[in-house]
Amino acid sequence: MLQRKSATQATTPPSTGATKTTSTTPAAPASTRQSRYGNAALSSQPSAATSLMNELVARTASSSTSKTGGSTAAAGKAPAGVKAPTGTAAPSKAPAGTQPGKDVYPAGPTGPAETASSTDGVLRPSRVSSRQAGALIASGDIVLQSTEKGGSTVASVVSGTAATVVSSKGARVKVRVRQGAGEVEGWVDTAVFSDQPALAKDEENPKLREDLVYSPIAGDHSPKDPKGTDTAQGGLGDCFFIASMAAVANAAPGLIADMIRYDPQRKTHTVRFYEESSRGSAKPIYIEVDGFLPTSRDSRNDPSYAGDPGGKMWPAIVEKAYAKWKGGYHVLGEGGTGEEAMTAITGGKSSVRDPSSMKESEVIPFFTTAKKDQKAIYAGVVSGVKSSQQQVLRGASDGPYAGKVAQTHRWNEIVPGTVKVTDDQGKAPAARDKGKEGDDTGVLSGRGVKDGSVGYKDSTLEIAYDAGRGPKDGKDLRVEFDYHGVVDVQSFLIGDHAYAFDKVVDGNKLQFYNPWGTYQPKPITAATFLQFFDTLALNTPPAAKTKS
Image (cartoon, rainbow, N blue to C red; front, side):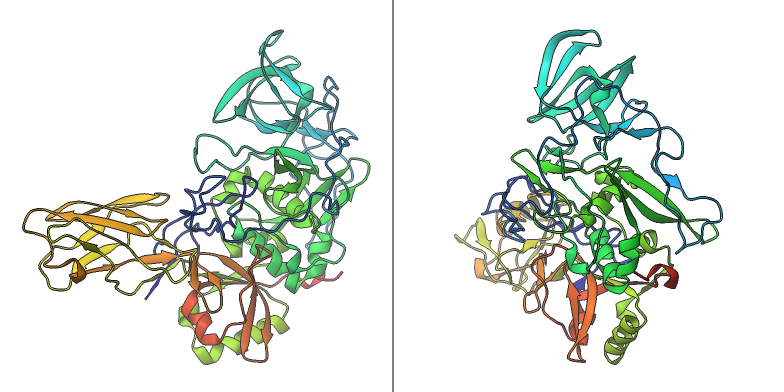
């Protein structure tokens, strides 16, 4: 029995270090939207023994000597004390009457004067406001001081440190920055504050943003020959968006090539999206971003979110622009839908199809026709599957009973809230867990249950009963649960994860693309598709925009 997904999808590839982290979500009822995958409780450096996904997608990043993805040189850093220029804003809208496929990109500063850029390639606001997110970027370390006039040193931070505005006064701004496991506040020159999307929340401490810095990935990253395989999702739970980019690149690479413009004078990229109006028409929206991307402190040429050293960086630029438009990276990390993301990318209307409404004989012809019609296709995998009953609890005659359930794959974990312990002889009362999303452990409870616990990540259980209420023998106890992770080992499908359709193989199998850029699934049959996929979205890019 398959467990269906809920609201939004945001599966995150895990990491072996602090650069790209992961997050989890329990399974939930089905809908056309999909939920986060269950890895939210992982730390930036998860334990190899207890993480669901700590080994999963050990994203073999290229050596730091690979410079294709950008440079960590000081170019693009504005000197402290440089007055912030005034001028452009992002987003800005195309001129009235502009039609999809015939978009005219803004030339230089346009729109309200909210954001400006000097020729060093750093976007800086012409004015700041409280709670505004950004980063402190200068030619060297930046000193935070105790008062707007100077005062004592509160902290010294590296260029690129993410910051949030607390207040401003004249040419000085008070910011809040992360320092280890806490935060500090101090005053800096407004000129060093840059306009950047807010980082995702730290999974270990949601009150803090991730401990990342903005680093320059310099150069023109507009795509020349875009492909779906260019995408490489990082430590942000936005597989719905990365998979949507890959799906559109597979169907209409010319549209991807046309959606990004690089300005060599401003050293910035402008990305075109489309916003649906109340009448259903799509209006172009232009978002300007600089080349500073979130990275770890010790690997500043390796973007922590989309993008890998040596790889194509246009997906990271598009991801950043989308995050800026929607309110921050943290917004993308909360999940979304493929149909909405593909519409935002193409301006074409998306449609959804419930795989459960399809017959097995319809699947291959459906995808074959969609591929021929150049449709972008996004598909989501079920969040989890139900285990078979397992007899794993052992103990003395009066308990407690303990054991570890077997998983179909070493990356799998128990879905919180799905554990059930029963006695096949009917003597001991049933027990269930009370876990919830993000929990590492949960409590087993029920009438006649004295106490009990379950480890969702290490798959361990322990239970004790009130006197006279336990089983005749621990071997009589049965454990069942839902698990997520690799929901189908044979084809290597990841649960609660979004994929982009690639092609029909050998006339009878479907090849999907994992937006992580690694751990690609094997071609699957129509029967496997219907068994493990529960979300399907299609988008028809307007013909005028698909030409290279």
